[in-house]
Image (cartoon, rainbow, N blue to C red; front, side, top):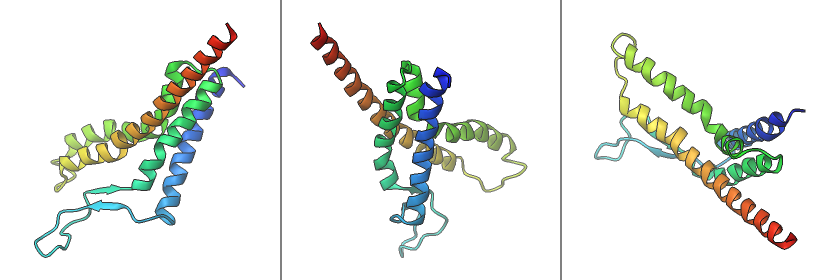
Length: 158
């Protein structure tokens, strides 16, 4: 097995598999998501939810990001490989928003008549920025603790 596979692909795919598997389990068995939808004066929702947030999933993402960073660092990965392994689960969503956003903007007049661009930005926040920040929090904290542990080993051996 090549070093790139051990340092990047295995930790990245494991991080993706664990995070998406946990999201699927939470959707099936877990608590209901937090929904944000416009409401009228009587309290009834007028339209479909604007924002759906799976809070338990977001709270577990730092641990999953730390796992990806630890596995990549343990395999001898570079800083870039460790960072990429940490945030790998949000990259498919980011690609969707980077490609889908301009396509929707171009075809807005011809295909979609009632699309609101604010929904695209809310989706970008809910599915890319917030999970990416949670994964990165766990990955950076794991990097910090791993680097401190390596420094203490170096000092002890001197």
